[in-house]
Image (tube, rainbow, N blue to C red; front, side, top):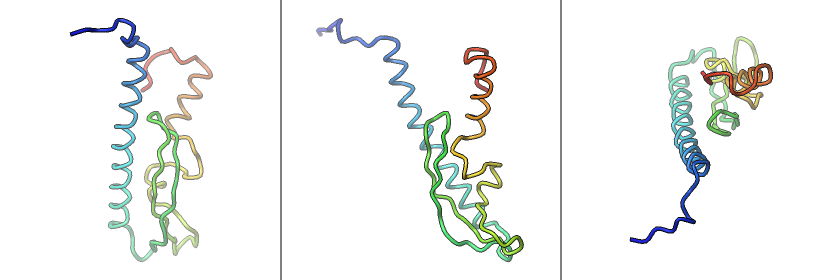
Length: 120
């Protein structure tokens, strides 16, 4: 078998390719988890208080890349406004594009630099 030494990937290319593949895998897993949680919240909500109205797209920047989910919006009969139960339970504002983790990492990197330790 003949191997062309000029076509061997560098370690940088290997890491980039692996990272991109893992991002896709983790994006799909995370979207599935959020969809399942949104379904569970719909089935276990206070039916008298929250009326299921619609689904609304929301894009969130995460460590895995941008994720677009189609979460449910409800009408809160007590507060008289629309609400996404998924956002409430995740302590996330759907109007923000950055996940809380990305926002925290940006602040940490701005203050200390990106190489000061673990991402977690």
